[in-house]
Amino acid sequence: MDQLNYIPESEAAKMAAEANTLGVAIIGAGPAGMTAALYAARAGLDAVMFERIGFGGQLAQTEMVENYPGFPEGVNGFELAYAMKQQAEVFGAGYIGEEVIGVDFSRTPKVIKTSFGSYEANAVIIASGARARKLGLPLEADLQGRGVSYCATCDGNFFKDKVVAVVGGGNTAVADAIYLSRICKKVYLIHRRDTLRATAIYNDRLSELPNVDILWNAEVRQLIAEDGKLAGIRVERTHEHEMISIPLSGLFIAVGNEPNSEFLKDSVSLDASGYVQTDEFGKTDLPGVYAAGDVRTKSLRQVATAIGDGAIVAEDAAEYLATLPLHGID
Image (tube, rainbow, N blue to C red; front, top):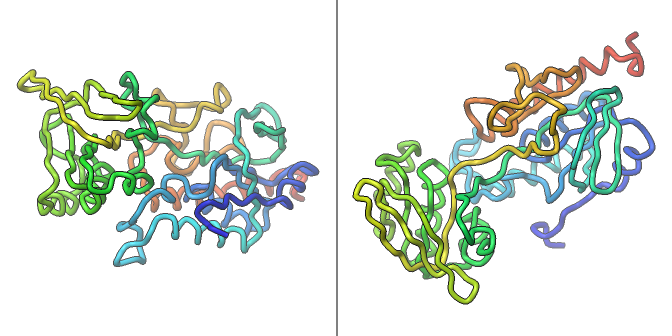
């Protein structure tokens, strides 16, 4: 069976979760969630991950990860994510392919609500990650999948030998431009400032690519469609107050992320941007509720920090559960 198209669901985990209260429910199966599941399962806890689409989160959509320790030549993001999930399952972690749409943390056991029902858990780890931020332009939603994309490694091959643009100035945007330069005839990198935020190694690689042009101090103002597909963009050169038109087939948007935290509503404290507020150990203001990875307020969101978060909160969750009468310490 093709692993890329197979989204597994642990029927045994689902049946157990429906019949009994879980030890720890982990909302999300990205690097933070899978690490939390691994550590929780190895600690002897009944741990189940809930994930709507599939394991890996943004990691599984990354062509090459070069800053994860232990891989001097880099590692494919999907392969790394798949290995993480396998390792968690080897130690007994469960997986339920259902979207969490609501929670009730006002009681113990806590309630996890999905599109198909409700589950109870004595502890919850929120590891729901983040998603790509949109530009908010007219036609953007209509043209998604018709020329507008938020994942270069997912969709880049649809634009072989064509002209495309990448919007953004961070590591993701520059990595996308480098990746697309190997596939596409021409790549524009559009950045609203006059310097990139990407690390130096990305800048050096970018400067060596003859088919990549950088548009500094520029912002996309309009998407142009023909026959239901993206045909070009209108870009403002903000310093010159000049509008230019660029015919192209693909636009890859990499302008940051937004937390997947809408389902939390008023159940836990969020910052102004919607990220879950925790202490340095991932504890929220509610006993037995933790947050790990990109969904929580933190200064650096990387695979390595997500994995550290997952390990820390799982260990703390184990200590918390040991204090509950159900787990033998009254």
